[in-house]
Structure formats: structure tokens, C-alpha cells
Amino acid sequence: MDSQTLLRDFLLLGAGPGNLPDLRLRYSQLSIDPGSSGDHGLPMVSEGGLVGIVLTLWFWAAVIVAGIFGWLKRRNRMSMYLLPGILAGLIVCFAAGPDTHHLFGLWPEFPGYFLAALWVAVACYSSTGDPDSSIGVLTPKERWLIIFLTCVVGLTGAVYTVGKIGLSVYKPLESSLSSTSAGPGSVDFSNILEKHLLLDPLSGANWYAAGGFWAAQREDEKALACFNRGVRLNPLAGEPIYRLGQFLEGKGHAEEGQVLMRTGLQNAPLSKELRRDYLLFLLTKGANKDALRALPGLLLLAPEQTSFWLRYFESQDISGGRWLDLLPERAEVYRQYGDYLAERQHNQTADTVYQKAVQLAVAEPWVSGELFLDIAGYFVDGGRLESALEVLRAGMESHPTDLTLLLTAASVYQRMGITYRAEELYRKALLLDPDNREVLLKLDNL
Image 1 (tube, rainbow, N blue to C red):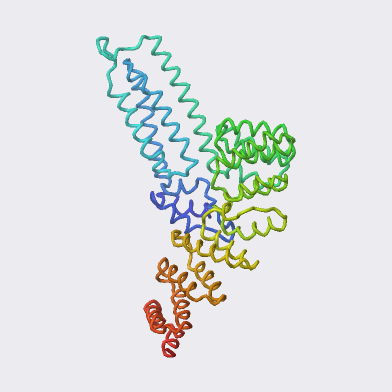
Image 2 (image 1 turned 180 degrees about the horizontal axis):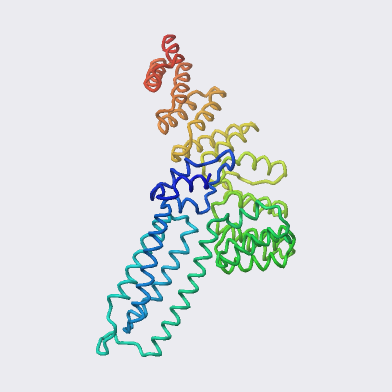
């Protein structure tokens, strides 16, 4: 995104809250940086402009000043205990803003403004302390202890939030490290690493990315230290923990590394890249049975790879036994397995597999009409026109507006001599495409 032009065009009043998606499209520079928004915080400013920034800062400054000075006059326990909790909530709201690229004018959204209202109510409209109240008042020592703890929470949160806001205008650490050619001892890399890890030390992603970089540079001790910090901060990460397992496995810690690799897969079960990588890892280790057990999980996410893996296992003389008991029930998986069987002249089994593929395709609305056409073509080539029609009828039920399915079914009826059904389908095709000359000619021939 051309962030500088965007900021210049809407510098004073901004473009208004809610216009960020349109701004991204208008100021995209796909020829320069395809697939990347490239904003890094500037659109948050452009939506409110300088006026929005000033008004937002004025609001929060008024809340903080009124809240602090009013709260210092409170004595009752309820008021004194509430503020540390309110501050902690506001810190979370503000610190999460840069990560999610929330709009500057709405930041930190409804929860933050609710907490601000609660703070003002506690500080300015609650009791200053009545000894006979059921809530009771704090002793001077208790009161100063609460004030001290509140100051610690507030200052710590302020430092952390300012660091997050400062980093929001830069690229994330992962992309910064992948885009730099700097070595581990260079000034550029040191600045990037120090800036992200110092100002945002609680981000597990930053530590994982740093660990990956140091591992690539063969700085094992530094890599392991960064990885350990990342695991403590985010033990539920998927790919980072998997990469840590790869790192340990490559350093001779096979058992620990493989446990972490499996943990990473469990944390990211929908990552077909990790599943494919793990399958290749098992094959390189000679764990063929484990690789076969890992195959269904990959094909469930990437059914288009079925043909490749069937041929690969065959070339390596790795038997899957009864593949029908191993393959996941996905239409594309069964179609490609049917193709595999048909190429080897196992026609009877191929017929069963193709029919199963059609049944699955009817229940999978994302399957295109091409699957039905391919399977019907197999039956037509074998002279089994009735079986082909069954497949095409199932396809037309799932895709009633697919012109190619209609024309193919009509041509099969015509070859079988059932001309009234062929004419019926040709006329239905004309309703979808009235100017189709091919259909008009076929109707004339009938």
C-alpha cells in the first residue's frame, strides 16, 4: 500500500472510520508488493486524521487526569480495589490495538470505553469513605499499598503499550528478518532484533522468529534461548513449535524433536504445509508405516495431491495394503484413486471407487462439475452409457446451472437414441444460454 500518499491525502480530517478496506484497495501497489497491505499503522492515523488524533488524545488525557486525582480522594474499599483491575483491562485493550490494526478513532473499541466510564464513576462519583458503611474504609497503610500497586501496574502497562504502539509502524519481526540479508553480526540485524525483542518482550512470535533466524545462522545457543523464551510465552503455537522440533532433531535430540514436531502438528491441524513436511520427514527416516498413517491427514486437507502420493508410494515399493481403508472420504481423493486404478486396468475396483466419489461429491457443495464430467467420461469411453448418465444426473442435481453437464448428458441421451430426453435437455440449456449456436444446431439436427 502507498502509505505515504494515503497519509498525505487524508492528513487533516481523515477518511472517516470504517473506510479502511476501501482505502486499502484504492492505494494498493500490487506491482510493487503483491499480496501485502504494507500499511504498518499509517491507515489507523489516516482514518481519523490529525483532528481525530487530537480529539482521541484529549479524551483519554481527560479520563486519566480526572480518574487519578478523583481516585486519590477515595477511601472506601470498593473504589480502591477497582482501579487496579480497570487499569489492567485498559492495558490489554490498548496493547492489543497495534496487533489487530484497529482504527485509531475507535481504539480501544467498546471494552476500553466501558472501562473508562467505570473509572470515572469510581473516581468521581463514589463515596470518599464512611466508617459506618458496610463496605468499610481502608486503613492508611492499606490505602498506600493499593496506591503503590496501582502505580506499578499503570507504569508497567504504559511502558509496554508505548512499545507496542511504536513497533506498530514497522514490519513484524518475521518479515523483517526474512527480507534482510544482514548477517548475525551486522548493525542492521542487531537493530531489528533489539528493537522488537526489547519493546515487545511478551510476544512469543517475535522470540520464535528470532530463534529461527539464529538457527539458520548456526548460532545454536542463541537460537535455543530464543526458542525457549517463545515456548514459555506461547506453548500453543503451531508452526514455531514444529520448527523448534526440527531444530532439535537436527542437533541429535531425536526423541525430543519428534515430540515437539507432533505437538506443533496438533496445535496447527489445518496446516497442509506442516503435514506434508512431516510426511516427508518420516519417509526420509524410513518410518514407512508411520508415513502411511500420516497420509490421510494430509490428503484430507490437500486432496489434489492424492495421485502424486499414490505414485510416489508405488515407486518406492511401499504398500498401503487396502487403500480404501486408508484414504479419507473426500470426492477428489476417490476420483484420483479411481484414475490411478483405471490406468492400471483395475476396472472393477475403479468402478466402485468412482461411484463412491460421486456419492461424496453430491454431499460436498464445493466440488465443481468437472469431477462429474471426468467420471462420466470414463464410463463413456468404456461404452457404459447408462452408468455415465447416472453420474451426469447426480452432477446436474448438484449443479443445475452447469451448461457443460447439461450438454454432455444430452449428447449421451442422443447416442442412446432417447431423443426426447436429449431435446428436453438442449432446450433447458437454451434457457441458460439463449444465443448458443451449438445448441441451436443440435436441436435442428434432432
